[in-house]
Image 1 (cartoon, each protein chain N blue to C red):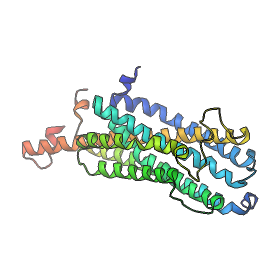
Image 2 (cartoon, rainbow over the protein chains, first blue to last red):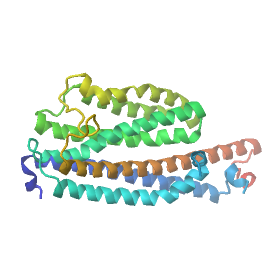
Image 3 (spheres, chains in turn cyan, red):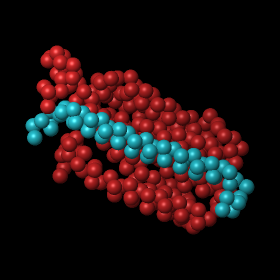
Image 4 (spheres, each protein chain N blue to C red):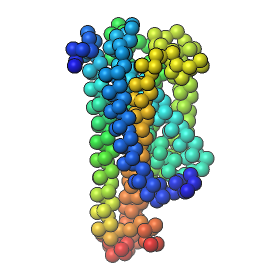
Length: 57
Length: 255
């Protein structure tokens, strides 16, 4: 596969690999951050803390 | 449901939760199709050979780098004019994503430039203005992080973001205003695209998929930012309760 990309295969492969790593990093970061915020929110709710908006319910 | 209803953070969280799985799925489908077209259907360029395949990631990344900053600029207007908290949330969520896509555009451009131009980097108008865009993203992120209270930082960052938006037309028209190594616009131009359809279609499919991916990450990051601000608000409420009741945990008073 890589050989079929010709003499500049290394440049093409590097461009796609770096893009993949950066995009995968973004997705992992955003999902991990979401889980961390949910954990924090759940922990506060378990301690009995409520938002003012929730307290009205 | 109008746009103003969506601007309510609670409503936004409910709607975005329903939209997000579809966005992730559509983005993945278009990117897989685009990658297949890029490597198995698109021919080599008659001058650039296989290196033209770098274009299928470089050009969408460059477009999204500018789209990300445009979103920040529009959100900044929302922050300054309507003082809507979701506007700042949107801007803040878009900054790291825009910076990442700008980084991809710079690196893939460099990897394309070396075999085609014989140089990793040249200080021409297009490349330099995109580097400035990347530095502006980093500056905005640093400035946001400098404020403990997001509401206080929002308006200051919004002003700086709007000033920085002057760079967007400079990036777009740099290849026309100055002599640069970078090629001029070949897709969005008067008279239509100059790229052959066998290369144009994979590019458009990749660009659409990458745009959906950007929007999915942005929506997820906005949800995280709303949650972060809720956590912060609850922590402040708890701290105030402790201060007024004198108890260390303050838990019973807040329950």
